[in-house]
Image (tube, rainbow, N blue to C red):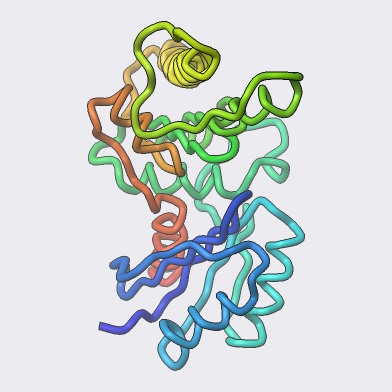
Length: 251
């Protein structure tokens, strides 16, 4: 089966490509933000001669525009996702200023949820967004906080002697006996606790339990710690772009 549609999500740390055919994700991978040769290799390997349309969204304007211009050299049917493309209410003060990735992820979650239940979408990358949406009211906004790695890096960069600490798929459960362990314990549990509190705040706001969707680089870690491993969708934005194309083709 050859892909016919290419979905692209330009993030803060990488470019994600998703290759679809009739709504089925066949392949996905990450590309460097500035390495044009990797774009060319991926296009020639996976896309050349089979891709009929491309939909791209992103939150890094310079990279997004550069990638869009490069794609236009490869295909005539390349489109930047706009807020107007989303057949979903956007109930915030300034919809145009809301990150398109947040909206596409929420759109995808509402399409994937089994019933007309509210959803909370947690996208855990360089920054973490925790957003609320419902079929009745659409996108209702949410919260933005630093991501796990950003919190750890800021301690290293903005203090004199605190080291850089990296994280695995586990968060330390006991107090630290040295500086490394103390940072791991503090930052890791602040990260989990912050996201958990925001989820509970949003559920209190609507007086209902929401279906949780986790995505992004640290999405699985959050799903494992906060939702018994359920609700992890690593390619939620790419899936949302595919669903947008399906919906537009259905009229």
